[in-house]
Image 1 (cartoon, rainbow, N blue to C red):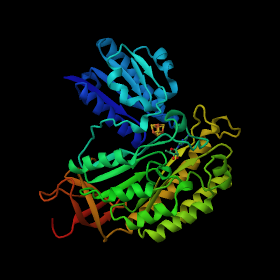
Image 2: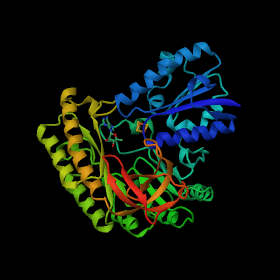
Image 3: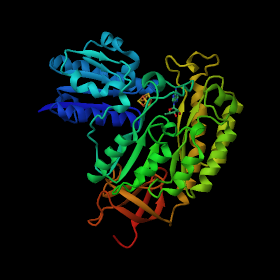
Image 4: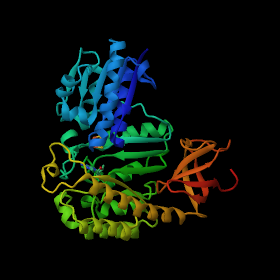
Length: 431
Ligand code: 5AD
Ligand code: SF4
């Protein structure tokens, strides 16, 4: 049995691409290992969304040279978004890299490793019609691709250049994969796409959700990511009416300033965003809303930043991911005048995170003494003697270990205490 070490950075899409590369490599006789030193094949599935993500990969790559010297038979694959952007240059700069495989070509990793080496970064117009096997981590929750690529060209974002044009997977093949997962005992699925609201398979996104809702055995349906400009009433109604669709939406705002939103090419104003939040909250009581924020976009003035902070206060998100703006090759924003110094970006980011921490804490505190349904996932990663699960609103709840509780169970729990990033609970009815 040959051994493969796979390391992945970046978004859930990338994590799932790694699961599919493992699915393909399994058919080629590979089994996964936990340490690069034990591997015959190393796969780095890279992310280029921000410079920091790139740096993490390069420092890991540097350490691989030594492994290759010790074991010349070792093969090294660089996959993912950096692979797509850098292409053959990666092999020139790091000759110990054997294969470079972009996100549209991960299905070819099996055939690639039979070659002497190569660069696989062509556009694949058939991508959405290929069924690439996946070997998933865990057995309760599963990711599913529903679309690939992105056509939005937000001015800061590298994704349209790395993942190519938007393409929807046919509904039939999505439903078939989910039925298979249900039969295998999976309870929760997360539909993946850069912009799931613009899904245009042979059904609309709301119709797709409705068909998935009918699949027996699946208990919960989630999806990421939504774009505010494409979030319409059809989806809001589907979220209201479909019992398995969870009360959570991740809806990246990016900035609270209309001037900056325009420069970002987001195609909505703060006011339009607020109206959608209002409609969501009205239709789906208790819905959790999370977001992404970028601090220090080029030309961002103190009043733009203040508008973002006040939007955070006004909306009251359940959680946010906030990042310092990072100039990315090929993107329009990287060429703009008015790039801000690191200190300014850091200061603004710190303020955003500090303000939001208080909001998140208050939101979590409000759940103390309520009863919530959690889907039990398994042992807690951070706390010993605890099991972990999530509410339908995607909040992590830790509960005491018990013989009567096992992964995959839906459990009613009373929330005893709110911490900043998780909740403590106990099963109702003494389980
Ligand atoms: N700099 C900082 N953050 C970025 N994001 C995307 N591109 C950049 C960039 N160049 C953030 C956005 C997006 C999230 C996935 O990453 O907030 O929603
Ligand atoms: Fe995912 Fe974007 Fe990073 Fe590519 S660049 S791995 S699409 S977050």
